[in-house]
Image (tube, rainbow, N blue to C red; front, top):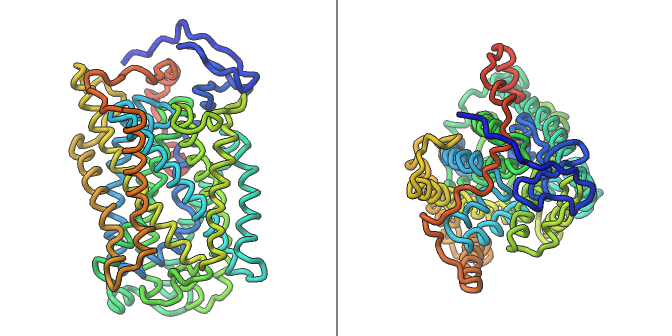
Length: 539
């Protein structure tokens, strides 16, 4: 494939928020030399892309959320749920990889839904994805209060939330380059902690810590499956929430230096890292504590009880709880930053297209969307609901909202991908022209659509079992109702129509000028095996 020419492109150094490209082919430069594209700075390298998604997905809550998973559906039931959602995410990422490599635009699949399906879908999907990440911000702050509650109850949960909220408000305004470096190193630390967690679980299970061999005792008693279909429904939601964030790679394409080269690499490596880590954590949690241990996190919990904390306590090392707490609180640092990043960029994408107030589209001279960041983080204070309810109950409510919103977002990623390919074929283009092709298209894309629509409706199954609970029903299905109202309302008010395939825009936003001859040459260079191993682990 030839290298696109950059001849005729005009460069301009941005010295104020208004110094952004106004003419086609004009490029503004930040003070550090990076390209300013649609107001955002393209300052993320390949290693940043990979570890941002990893750091945002593997948060503190996974350390005690695995306990919730095995409590809901048993050790093998939890593994099955996380594996099925993992397959789902694999095909979601294949669809996103093809779309975002071809169109590395602000808003990613949110913007492309309006281009290839219906502008009304872009609005409803964008708002859905934005409040998904606002609830994730709130969930992360709630998680912090849960974790800190293990050390002391002298400080109320709301105070911990406000302290960390103020700190993250400051760090989130430092700019994309600083954010990328912070996420890279924090994610590397998290990777080390996960490997350490695997080793601790092995030592506890084999009796090297505690002196008692456990083996698969807890798979025999209380058993491998718990709570039937109700338990599976809860764990599917939990797994979706933990995997959600993998798709944030598509949004980083708008701030990547070279999305065509770096995005496919990041998608391949990040997915496998996350899958191995989640399956590993769920497996080890199921062999170090019984699924019926009443100290595992439930809706009535006031502090987080990690399976690793319980296993070390059972083995006679009470101080191990403090070690696990340190791991969890440091893990939380990058996941909150990532949640603020995705929420704010989703809001910027909506505002840029006139689907949210214009003030949220404004950025600084170095491409920092201050208004969108401050407002999105402010909504994270929803976590203060734990003043009226227990942190465990708030955790459950936020998980339900985030899970349903995630299933909706993933389903319409598949719909948008199918429509893009149909437009591509209708306008006489060949799949060989695509810089990245999704594996098993169209079967993978249809799998994503059908599975996630099914999971949206099964996720609230528990509210119909053992007596109807109105509050639980609202939290299980309110996201579906809001999404439908937003879509229909925007369609009626703006009189939008489904985009004809023959008229779909297949040109705008290609960003071919970001590919350089040096990049093409570097891809052909041979890499020593030890460098390849290092890159696979730490990008």
